[in-house]
Image 1 (spheres, helix red, strand yellow):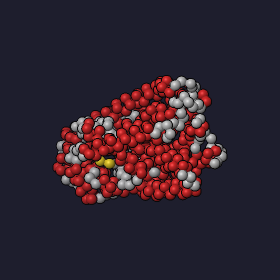
Image 2 (image 1 turned 90 degrees about the vertical axis):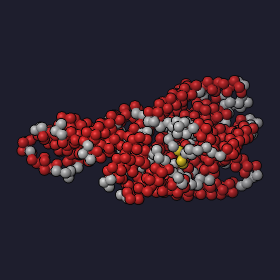
Image 3 (image 1 turned 180 degrees about the horizontal axis):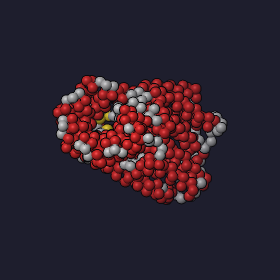
Image 4 (image 1 turned 30 degrees about the horizontal axis):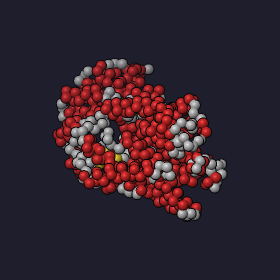
Length: 624
């Protein structure tokens, strides 16, 4: 059997003309985009969308040179994703904080990924219908909703686009290996890593791609310039050496990622989750992902991580099942190479995210399946298609089955998109399907606070703290609710507990700021200044702390210190409060023209801000 028989290189087997390929690509793109259009009616959610977009002054400033410099130098949120930050900034440049625009761009990127995935598979296998069905499954599968409907997960869909384009470039390179073509693969891989390091396994996946469908690893088969007369073992070694630059780039990305996660205190230690616990979670999670691929029910934005050990039988069964499944697909590598490649694609691309190196408190996440599920979809589609051909099942019946599966998935996806409508809907559903989930309880409480229902928020915060006493965000939010309703001493205790357990620097800075406000209300000004100063030391851009400290300094007639704080606050982000108090200090110092400019800046941002107009009118003649 020659190569052309094993892997068709033309479209005749599919019974359609090659010219139909771009038309099918366009159809996949527009049908996926149409399915996801409802996301443009969704809001931002209070789970990373605030720190990535809504409350991020760099991103909100739009695509400026300062934002570009910050994007390439920051480890904020425990990542080094400069292209993702720039994409968020570009969205703010175009749409401001209108969530629909941000969501539409993510939907557009996902639709592009569907079309490019089809072109990748069709170009490598020559099979149109199988390739289009894999791409369509990828487009409509409900597990992928999280990657698209969650604005903060722009990094998933963006890095995937560069990942798929790198596969396209690699196919181009394999047909005629040249340094220039290899350079394009390298560049696209770099761009993917700069969007999100989930694409880090690309070099390993390219070795699988060499085995099937490109068949560069087998000396019996030839695909033009990409093949040689080396034996299989030698050819494998050459293909590994060929990818050394890509492996080095992946290693560098891994090192930078670990640095970023340590800087953000995102890496969990053995005191949080033991090594044995993480191994058990990884083994069982692989099968949970397989289960969700087959029946995507009870999907959630956060699956809580167990702190106790799994039942021994469950761990042993999971490990044995993985070993048996791997043995079966390896034994079938000659007659059905797609089984081994698809399964190892799934296992390998999931490995960095399976939880052996634990980041955050989730056991697994839908977004982590974005690349790995391609392997499972290839296995399923190629297996069923071969089975149907062997039994001579008509094309019409195959089409009916495919349409039914895609229709059901589309209905489930449409429903899942609805759960992302707003924070309340998202976390109410998450608690419903996951049960005891302290972080979801805390986020539902935050949503209720935003809806001006603190009375309903308190039970959820108390439940969150009961489930996880070290939950710093729960203590912080409960402190905020108590603070707002005037229970200052209980609020003080909750803020102190939040600081005791805080791992995130931004949250710690916000807690110090709130403590400063509370202590100032209690008349403990020196302690309040200390808290504001601590917040600024942790996070120099903590604008509220600069304003709070400046107001105390103003009351104590420390005008120069107050002016410096107000000017710094105004420099961080335009604020009518910062300009107003800047004007007050300058007015007291007799610097009327400068005070007038500060008041005008405040009025430009907020035309009816306090008594700014009256103050500006007092010395208008002097300024003239």
